[in-house]
Image (cartoon, rainbow, N blue to C red; front, side, top):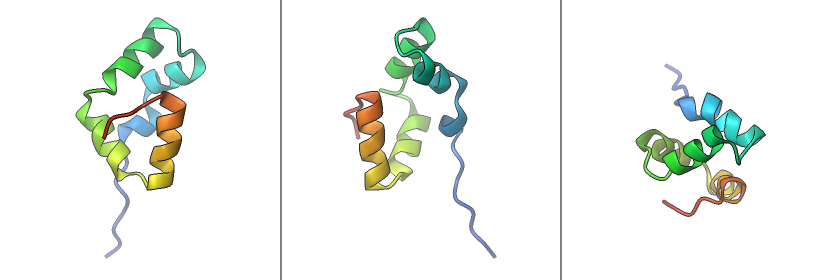
Length: 65
């Protein structure tokens, strides 16, 4: 039986897309604030490889976990 990689909603989150398009918008700022304590983001982030985590840290100025 094949094991599928878990898909996280964070990959296709509409608020994340708003941040990517306009980081200074209200929705963008809300998403960026939200990832500091979101259990879904933590699971998504910690499931990424070290290289992917580094890219996410740089892109989103993220320092937790």
